[in-house]
Image 1 (cartoon, rainbow, N blue to C red):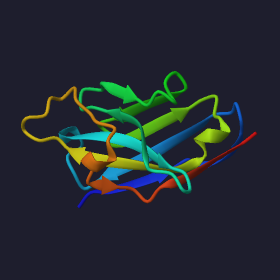
Image 2 (cartoon, rainbow, N blue to C red; image 1 turned 120 degrees about the vertical axis):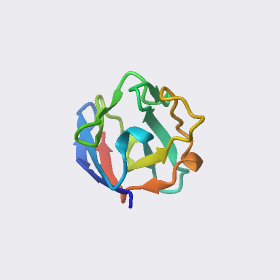
Image 3 (cartoon, one colour; image 1 turned 30 degrees about the horizontal axis):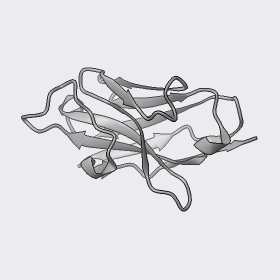
Amino acid sequence: QVQLVESGGGSVQAGESLRLSCAASGFTYGDYYMGWFRQAPGKEREGVACIASDGSTSYAESVQGRFTISQDNAEKTLSLQMNNLKPEDTAMYYCAARRRSPYTSIWYCSRASSNFNDWGQGTQVTVSS
């Protein structure tokens, strides 16, 4: 059973940094690609970043250059380093996992939420100006 537990959210001022973590268990981590998503009140869930099995990454344009996704396969931990935070980054942040099919390359990941089957409970990030 896939379990994803996020931590590290909080309230910060604009320009500050936060690091989110996601502890994964219940599956073979290398068989999955992972993603971070966020959802603000009244808005659709947005794919912030994803990371493939081989470490290849993809970012939303809104966070490119400010956020960094990384993973520790041995520890089954996914991280999101968020620098220079802006008020528009305020949202609930979710970790998600998607098992690769036999036809999916190890360098591939997707930021589309519809591709993900397993989700954490979320951690709140609030950025004030």
